[in-house]
Length: 79
Image (cartoon, rainbow, N blue to C red; front, side, top):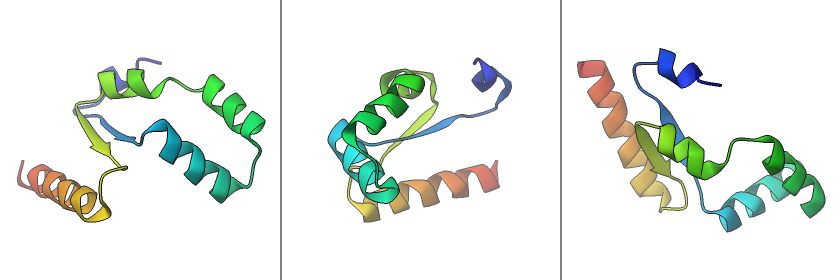
């Protein structure tokens, strides 16, 4: 949509395709066909990461992601 150009910083939360599928299907209790239809309507994960200033990989260990988010929040507060 180009709205990212209006932001000072953009953040993308990304997981590998297998993890994303597993999480979405478990949380929303949808079929694989429905999952694929949702993905088809969205911007690709690769494009989201390309546009983002910062990417959090949520297929990393939880503690690592939490530490990275905390560091970003600290940086923003101190800016």
